[in-house]
Image: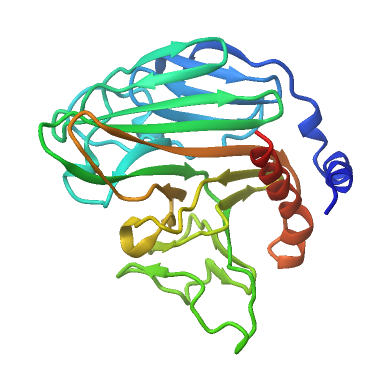
Length: 329
């Protein structure tokens, strides 16, 4: 697809991409917290908490729906030793293990703004010796760069992976790409691992297993949980809610070892929310060393139906646009 054709498609299907402007930062009250930070380019906005965190609690178009799920009973809370999900986007470390993974983020975080990027710094987790920070850069064209950093502040080595969990809103749909088709017997090796949990039910109607895409829809009436992990070599995943489209890009290193039997992407859902998760390779951190895991987000207005032809026609141009943008950085 030529760059001119991609530009024409964006004009026709995604006019909202042309309306954004300079990025501003301001302190606001949100969800019962007094010290939140709002980043906006006039078209989309992010709201980040500093009374707790680091966390992005809202992501969406200005005056539009929040694409991130919030837990109403936990909004405005802070302090204490009780683990709370809160909602939104957070940074964990994998593999998942209780209690290590569930270190609380109930305390204030320090922040720094240089006019372009906002950095959120969490204190060292007292139960793990791990320190976390997130740097966020919002561009004028509705793209977001998030740099997630984890440091080992212990006196011994720690093996872990950065794990970025984005808790998405109810009634939305997550989309993950399948690997490109290769006919048998022209190519006989496997394409990638698909990882199941003990409670995964592949016949659950929330799943849609297609030749090109895996789709999982959130259902507020559901009575069971679902989770799948995969090695996403194409490095993207999407979430659709009504006419809002949220896309993540992330790296894949074919020479690295990933957690959970080789997953760099996972999704989980219950009756309250659905998650779009990414993971970095496993790393053994020496005392004082750290890792960085980067996600790139974009938002657009588009109608993406559940049939694969619609995903090809409407969603893929956005995916390809961001891929070109990353190549030309």
